[in-house]
Amino acid sequence: MISYNYECDFKISNEDAYSHWITSVLKSEVKEEGEISYIFCDDEYLLNVNKQYLEHDYYTDVISFDYTIGNEISGDIFISIERVLDNAKTYNVSFENELQRVIIHGVLHFCGYKDKTETDETLMRNKEEEKIKMFHVEQS
Image 1 (spheres, helix red, strand yellow):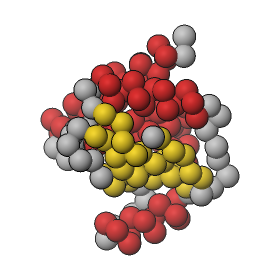
Image 2: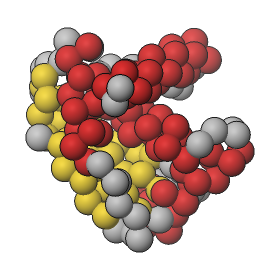
Image 3: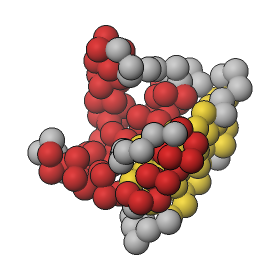
Image 4: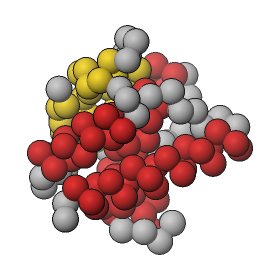
């Protein structure tokens, strides 16, 4: 089950479309859907999570906590809407595109993809783009 929680003044307009897309992404990775919770928040909220649980004192766009067991993907994904807005401007992409990227980024981590090395980061970006294209196909 995929759930959406809001700790800021933001709400996804079509949660069902996003849930269908995420489920399709999991199937494309031969994974099963467990409990995935999205928590949309502001910079300060996510900074506090970053400090408290990861001992990092900096802003970030997404933090994921993986509770996956075997092939069943589960976890919490915290997303700063403020960072998504800023990153969309920085990378000259739409807010929706950047939001989709961070939404699926956490799921890809749960599927086993990493982004700490240059090689892993390149693979992660390629996977993000591949999965974002699936969203557009689903909405056609």
